[in-house]
Amino acid sequence: MKNIDGLIDSVAPNFLEMNYYKSLFQGSFSKEQTMKAHLQDLARSLGCIGLREIQLNKLAELVKSETVSHEDAEELREVILDELPSLDRKSHYEVRLQMFEGYGYSEPELKRVIPLPEAKEATRIFRNIFYNRSLLEITIAVGAIENWYVPLAAELEKCYLGLGYTPYQVATYTLHKQADYEHSKACYKFIDRYSSLLDENLLLEAVREGFRSVILYDDARYKAATSNLPFESYLSLPKT
Image (cartoon, rainbow, N blue to C red; front, side, top):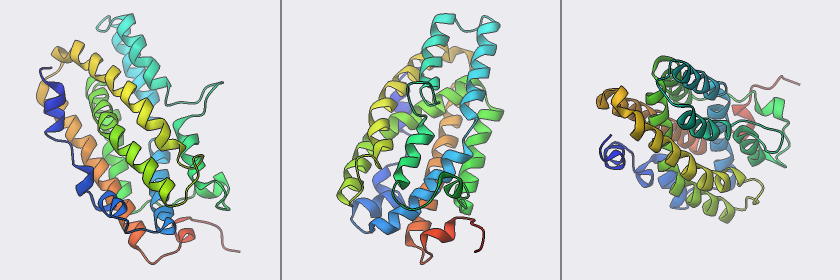
């Protein structure tokens, strides 16, 4: 694909103009408000469990059909597997859970998070990319979001530390500001090599859908952060 960065930049949102991030960086939220927003991020992580395995299966199918070389597939496979747990590292989901360390809730309780309608719709859109689109469309959507997220993750790490979070809690941002750079680079390299297999408009449509989900998740964070409901109201916990 010609000028892949320029084409993706043309459809990527400016995070400084998004509702939650804009207010966060302007200093409008307390730590307690942001904790409610993090629950919507957790809902996103839970809603996306299993999607990377779909991407791996679609990659394996293209290798089997000899559409993609083993060498190119292995490079992409490595960055996909980096999201998942292994013997020597936590999954990205497990690192996300560290945000709630010391907050008094167990993992089973946190997994009972109630996603707001915006988060539900965002998850539906993002899951559809994996279920209904080709490997190339999945890869370019993921790569575009990861590339976009690199500078944002660095700002979030700094901002949340300033609100009183510990380095352990903000490890998800420390991780992403580094890992997403390498991940997106590998995705773009793969797309550049195989983009002739798919119409450019389909690839850009997948990117647009990916960023549509990103914006909806931001709306969910903002709605949670600005509500008058307490943190526990967003958890479907049994009544005592």
